[in-house]
Image 1 (tube, rainbow, N blue to C red):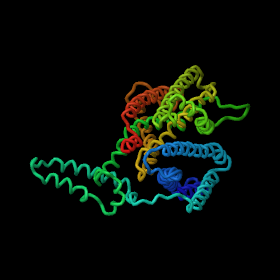
Image 2 (cartoon, helix red, strand yellow; image 1 turned 180 degrees about the vertical axis):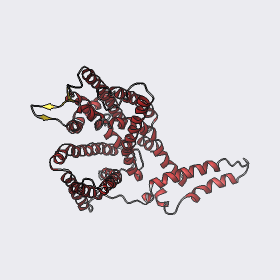
Image 3 (tube, rainbow, N blue to C red; image 1 turned 90 degrees about the vertical axis):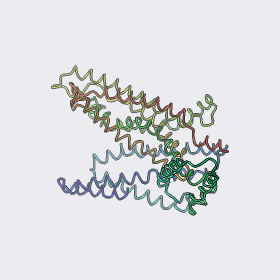
Image 4 (cartoon, helix red, strand yellow; image 1 turned 60 degrees about the vertical axis):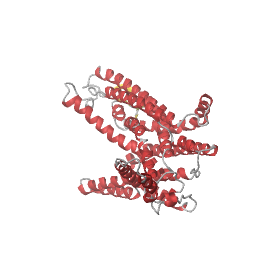
Length: 450
């Protein structure tokens, strides 16, 4: 990622000198690809590594493990608190620097900050807690593919029918386990009660059983894309004056999400958790799945409010003379409730997703668990683009009316799109609740084994 930021800074410098240079444009996309690859690499690894510093939780659940779980919940909350703090600085301070002093300085500062953070991380390499285990020698992704192959092979072999009185059947089953175990993995599999094949199959099952819940979280990620896109476009047409001369940039309202997270995160631990403990009589207050569900409900309410505000904006704008007035006399601060609600929903769902996917995978697959969380937003952004394309196609190409995403904001129907998102999110929430009812957490499985 540092290399990508260096390339991005040099691209901005080149563009400042030669604005029409085509090479700088291609170099820009290359630097953005490097940054994306860097984020995809270090985000899951660094977060899982940080959570592993709290305590070694390879043991079976006990009272101590519940304390560790609470500590990890706090870790993920304050991790996201720090991420939001950096995001707030980017939206406010860095936006001001880029607008005032130019893109070169605006990109150079994050590049220097990234270099300093890499150096600081390297300085602490001697005091970090590392988990060295022979069972982690293989790649989890390769284990999942291998488990599928082994399961199919076992299924095909099970179709071979032999006489019931043939003693060779028993002998074959007894020989299966040592034949399938690897000498390199023998140490890691000593503690496993099942054979090598079953061990690999179970690793694959752990990921596969998370997919239904992972899928139902995608609509939350789709809603997560709206503040930077359509919310901002709405704000551009509304009254943005503060005082006599200053106008609020519409994108600045995105900081309301991070500000609400930063301000309300401490109240989550100080007020909400003790209150829910009294109701549920659970030390954690609410479960991780309940926490994510609450955030999904709040995101639906945010979409309903966004639809109502947009309906009001359209009412006012259609009564105006487009030749005389271009700004709708409706304050941009009417958009604040939907921004704040999305920020509160992040406290519940985003932090809950981090803890959920980290806790519900084996220790050797923790990085993949965090990657599952980040992939929700990656796939959600593509799903949002696909949904917009479908809506655009059916409302403009084949429909009789104008597109919902018309450039003319008097004709656009963002309110209908927000209602559609709310409806799809309600359906996702219903299936999410059903899947959570059927889901058995990994800690419950370990309790049963114990």
